[in-house]
Image (cartoon, rainbow, N blue to C red; front, side, top):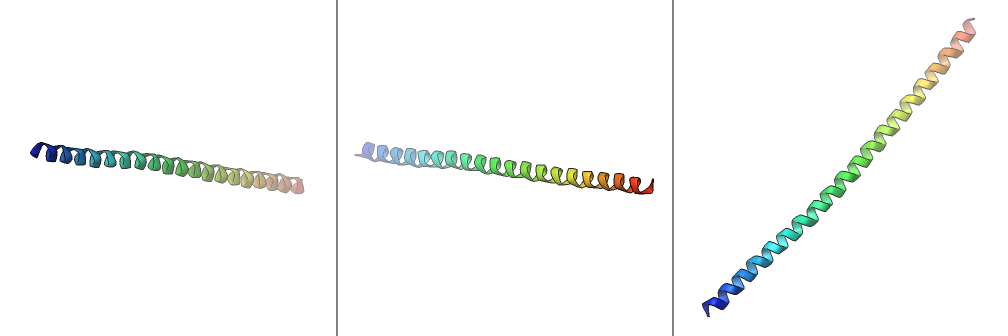
Length: 72
């Protein structure tokens, strides 16, 4: 009967290993999803900041033009 016990132990080890691999694989996809979300958020923040800067520069340029027209 020792051979049956050995087979059960091997089966148990294989099941544990399979469970760990499945957990690691699902963890990787979650990490990738988090990274994608974070990258998309960072891109959005940078685009918003650039748009704000451009708007501010355009407003300053307009004010300079209006100021030079008043001085003439």
